[in-house]
Length: 244
Image 1: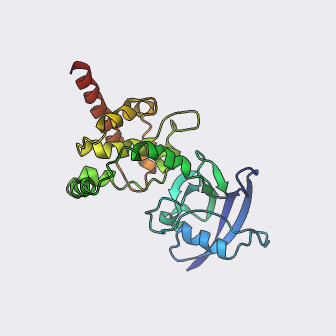
Image 2: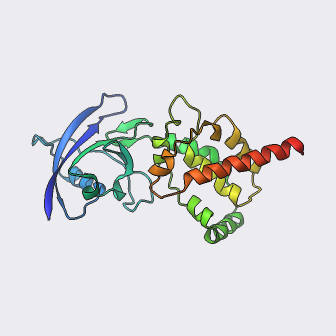
Image 3: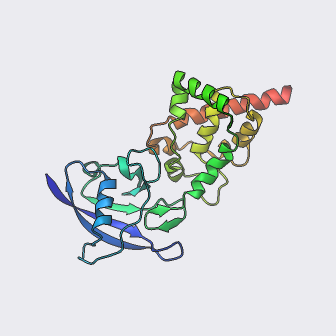
């Protein structure tokens, strides 16, 4: 069964240009994902006025919720386009790029800003092959580690977090959870450096406990519990160092 839906998209021609709104009317068939609808607009870039326009630009190559590239706001909620289905969000949609990051064009943001937050953590990961294999074996045996390892670096937890913004040094829940992944494994690889990030000026003290990060996570990672664990472990490490 097909039906027509109305989509209003916040567009931007380049990083320096002003944003503007453009409307589209799209015929959907069956249970279509938002990704499928956007691909349909790309193939036939005609707006609601019947005018030919530039294809809408967005990111995301996998289509299965594993690359994290297609994050956007749908009716004000941060979601992945490939995991969002039209029948679940209604027949009138407002699409915007994520607000916390610079927009390159249309719905495509500059993912380097997300990568920068995670790079603070990635630089502290063990790189040798044997250590990596041991980590994978532990992940397969521990549910907490399985939860932690599902992160796809999409940035939706950062978008939803009221404490993550351009005036705050906070790295965000995702990077904090990534640090905890290695802490839970009792890895001694640069553990002191990891704990310094958790308790430092970019760390967990900026968390306001809004719990919006967990609600936004498309992989259902229990970020509230993980952040509590990271704070607890950092506190234990602090007192161990203090009292020897």
